[in-house]
Image 1 (cartoon, rainbow, N blue to C red):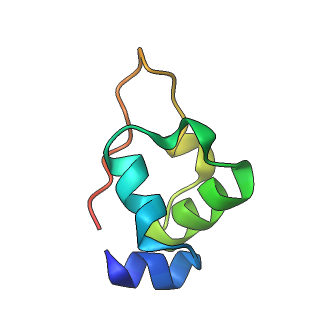
Image 2: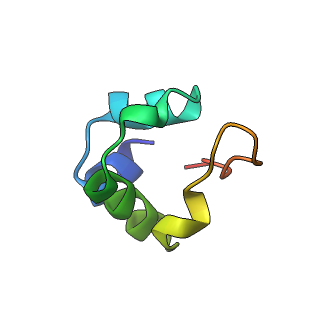
Length: 58
C-alpha cells in the first residue's frame, strides 16, 4: 500500500478510506492518480454504491 501511495502521491489514509468504501469524497484528480498508479483508467474504478466496486489490491 505504501508503494501505491507513493506512486499516486497520496496519503496512505486516502487508500485505506477507499478500501473501506468511504471514497465518496475522493476528488477526480486523486482518483486519476490512484488509477494511473495501478495502471488503470479512472472510469475503471468509478462506481456507485450499487455497482461492483473496483478491486483495490495494492
